[in-house]
Length: 264
Image (tube, rainbow, N blue to C red; front, side, top):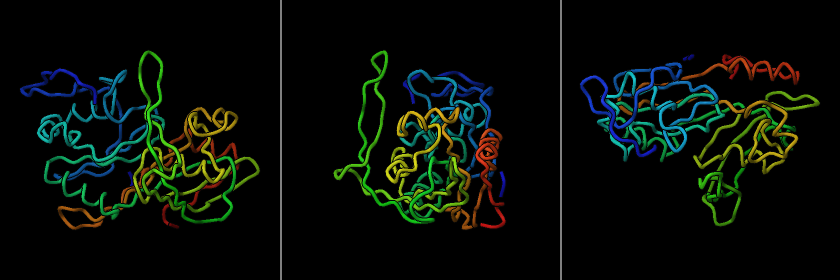
């Protein structure tokens, strides 16, 4: 199937909304029914409002058309947003349209029965063509500019159990393309785990060496597939988002090939 900051409530139509609607933020609808919507977020867009991004996030865009429904779900359930992607990561996200569908889909995440797949272009081929990275991840905060703090993570024995499966798709003398499945859902998990096996992602300004970080204009990570059994209808949902044009061009520069979805 192809494809929060503490703001005062904002009036929009007849509703009083906690998130400012912004129809100018773009995204693609990849799946939608009365219970859930799966969208593809472009790189450069923040998932949810926060300091410095109060009005230009994906959630602001969603509130432009679904604000009345999402408002009813409430802040404690992130207004329906079930997970997030880093600003520079493109790809698929699930948003619930009701409290019932949010809670039911949250159980899929907690039970690890929702499969999330990513494409990652990395600096080197992994030591094995496929495998599972099983290393605990610990979150921490680091001071940023203007009195801000950044949430980061690292491999650490005191961290939470974290597992990422990967397989090599293609490789060249300058880079390799991997498909990864995040079995658990820790902060920056795919980025940290790949860096831990000496396969940092191109364009990763946080976890990659400087030369690798500067080798691509943005983080070369794309959440390309979500597969799950719909918690409300029981149907099989398998949503895919094509690789964005900038990452397609990057693959061509590194002489890497991407298999078609039909071969997966």
